[in-house]
Length: 125
Image 1 (cartoon, rainbow, N blue to C red):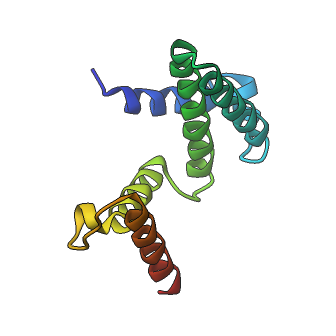
Image 2 (tube, rainbow, N blue to C red):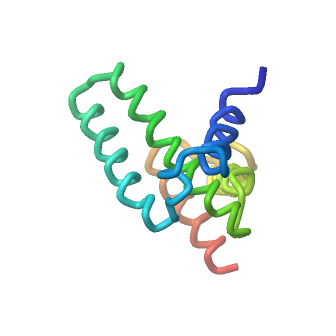
């Protein structure tokens, strides 16, 4: 069986296919903004309530919005979900140079300061 994430990508692809769901096929990156906002708000509310059971479900809903937007972008030749994941992986590794590189930090404040330096360095290059 495929991994869960690939399964989610395949579901989005099927929903957008000619044999999929008419509503899903009509969506655009711009129209997905409303869904993204709604799901983000539901995640926020679950966190605020300490409702971890609901939080799990809402995080899944939010994740699916990201997958759907990436699927639409892929269909338009803009970028793929793999590229989104590759970009965030690279960014996290570059920004956490004290974890994945040779920089040293002793506490949270130093970690935040190094993060900012790494971010500024990347932006200037």
